[in-house]
Amino acid sequence: MKKPKNSRLGIIGGQALIEGVMMRGPKGTALAVRVPSGEIETEGLDCVDIKGKSGFFRIPLIRGIVGFIESLLTGFKALMRSAEKAGIDLEEDDGEEASKFEKWITDKLGDKLMGVLTSIAAVLGVVLAVFLFMYLPSLLFSLLQGAVGDQIANLRAVFEGVLKIAIFIGYIALVARMKEIGRVFQYHGAEHKTIFCYENGLDLTVENVRKQSRFHPRCGTSFLVLMLLVSILISSLLVYFTDLDNNNMVWVPIKILILPVIMGVGYEIIRFAGRHDNLLTRILSAPGMWTQRLTTKEPDDSMIEVAIQSVMAVLPEEDLPQKTEKSVESSEVQAS
Image 1 (tube, rainbow, N blue to C red):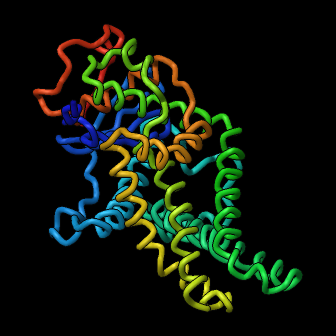
Image 2: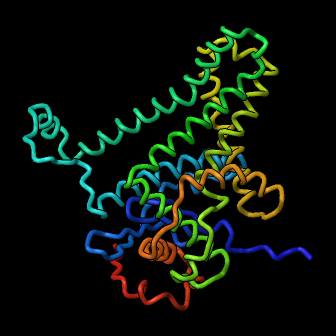
Image 3: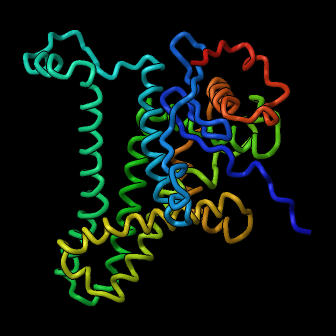
């Protein structure tokens, strides 16, 4: 007999923050953060809504591209807000007197300084990503092909794809060694466990959440891994049927241009895998689920409390749990 469809699947999504969790649900988007006093503060978040502007943006493949952009913009906004609420000084002052240049920049930009700095950081991040994941793999393969010969030409896409995956996993493994990032990964685990608890129809209590898996098929990590795998497939087809890869000055821009297609396909796969549980979806989810062993860690109870508050803030009234653990109820939550 066919199992009844779980109406809660895919309703809630989230992101780990600095000392907190952001959740998106039927009532909107909210973040919950453990502030320095030890209390949990929750607040609504105005998220970027491109899909709501036109039905065109909800068409399969297109919705994946739009969803990725929405997630990036909303996630960055939530991350900055969580840093503020957690008491992290984004403009670190080590007690030294500011230089003349720093004073000039502050006088000229004033309150806009942090926005300018984060914009510059974002641009530099994009440039670094293009270099590491687009140009560097192509350059290394061209050097290898020059040394070995054209008999490996058809292996370009596979070589570049495997190298990109290695860079991605290596980067995650490196940053995971940082204490602050380790705590974010714990909140990532709390986010997944809480979503699973809701999807399984259980009361949102610390005890129930703690029992859930920290690996979720709809995770952003799984999406990124799927994008890398899909890029190998699409790039292989281009290499086999065209000669666009003969020149790196042409091949690198081509890879950038096909990124939207890769995003769209990756999104549809992750969406399908998150709504179905069978052999095919388990195979599709396996690489991303394995990578989550690096990007998630077991949370402590205080982190689970934060994730529960974040989920409760975006649930419709009929889905709100009838009971929560005393430790959660006693938390002083400030809504703004």
